[in-house]
Length: 279
Image (cartoon, rainbow, N blue to C red; front, side, top):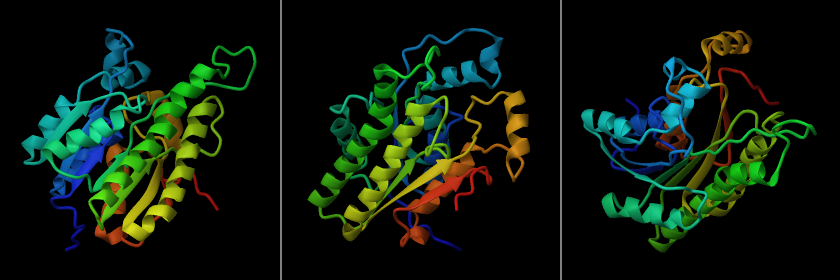
């Protein structure tokens, strides 16, 4: 039997309130290994439509799930005998980052594993005349959480890790397989690409202290936003002939945090059924 060495580890996962999301699946996967999980989340201030459309996968359904607290995920983890807590805060405010680590330490102790999964999204384009023509607002909305917050989260993790003279740490950042170029979502893709660069630099600088830093880049994953019609079209072009499940990505994240991945760092792992196959 393979022992991933995760029993008792303290895991901080950002963006983990959507019950259909990658963050929630990752929290449950770590809890199943005996880890103590702390869920960060932040609900959008948007108003969600109350219609039948909310009960069918698609944009409205997805926004409704994003508007939930983490209570449902916490209850599920606790029912399976796991230990979990949560706190809501906006990571676009840098002051909340040390506060978030303080919260984790108050209930579980120092963070051993950091999973940066939280993301902000606003579609934009370079095409003049478009309703989503790139703007300062679209740039800031994407980069504040997807790049800046991830960098500051890694820095806070490292600061506390070195302060307590830790010798074992894991960081796993969640990107997208469209980060290299994302037409129609140019700032989102660019912010994720920046995060990938931060991750490689962190792997080099933090490796001597026993911290590995890796990135998972999911392909199309059903987190509630893919309509049945979209799913059919997407599945036809994916070599494994289906869209992803949150658990598919969660399994890769747990692996990168495990003892089996102890000599893997600075790597970008595509998790998309073959949707993207880089040279």
